[in-house]
Length: 196
Image (cartoon, rainbow, N blue to C red; front, side, top):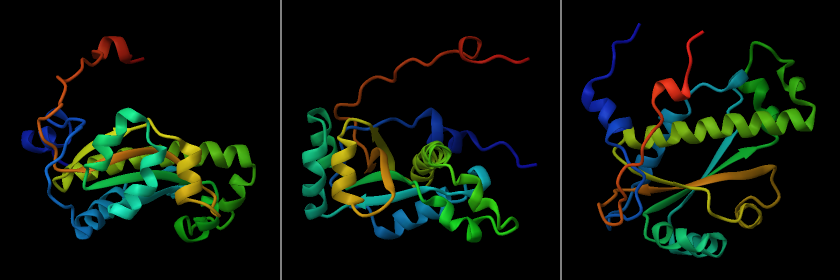
């Protein structure tokens, strides 16, 4: 059994971590994104289906393609971020199950029903998006997750001709205190959980 993480690690991942709106003018190296991915890909998904697909929007050209699809309130924090991750999920994820779930070569057939495949892809892709945020913090990045964008527009722009659908986006970089709101309250255990 692993030991409890240090207070410093818990602070970095959860307690001091915030959702940032403004960023240092400091690039994020591709190697940092790869290190982040190498962590997040180890998070659990059902039947190891790993449906999440990521597009890391870094260049001015790619940001110009993303900008028209953002809600007005998300334009500045996205366009000034070093990177904006588009977190999507592949509705055809089951095609990769012979590789990802090798001990049961019938697993692909579990998701022949399109509704079941879509629900599984969305649920597990969302999990992987959350793993990405924790992995980003683990490698020293800050996050600014957002759902204010036109999914259909992003899908047409970045995922045309594929079975991938966007879920949410997340700015990545090195956050500043500018426009950082006070931390919002959280529900206590007694209001959000029960032990039976």
